[in-house]
Amino acid sequence: MYEFEKYEALIKKTLSPYRCHHSMCVAKRARELALKKGLDENKAYLAGILHDITKEMPNEEQIALIEKYDRKLSYVELGNHRVFHQMSGALYVRHILKIEDEEIIGGIRYHTTGRENMSDFEMLIYLADFTSEDRDYPDVDIMREKTDRDFLEGMLYSLKYTIKTVVKQERLLHPDTLNCYNWIVNKMK
Image (cartoon, rainbow, N blue to C red; front, top):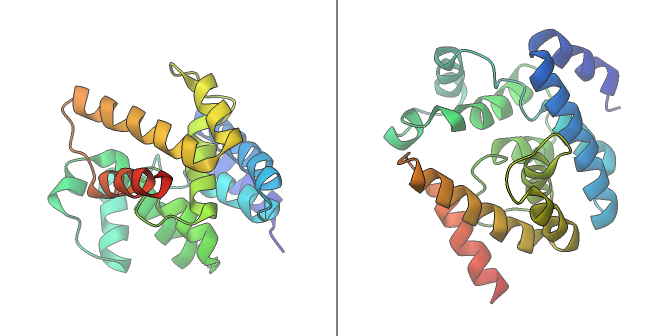
């Protein structure tokens, strides 16, 4: 049903070895987190494999895909190419690969910015990407501990990390990230 081998072969063909390795690490971490949290481990593994499917696609092609199947990008999105792949990836999975599972699509769609009212599955993919074994940014061990203990703790820590990084680099902050942060803070009170 999930055709893991087919999609593993696809990312080996379309992604660089680095990005392919990362995607497989995210798939493995997603499966681990799904087992801990009682979510569908096979669905999590597949979303992990495919979460960066368009990451190395040229920006112009990603924008064209988004505008063909969804909408025009906002100035914040156009000014932050790092968010293109979550949108184009979800659309690619739905329209090109013909995967219609809304959890998989949502997990891919929000794995970079987060969003207000994230589902547990969406948080799982976001956190698996942030805490996969190939990640080595400062505090990643703390991030993994918090994520393993509680998705909300992991989300709060990751969002603070992301917001600080984006502000320090004077990049545009996607409104979904800010809305996600506010939602998590409110939810934890």
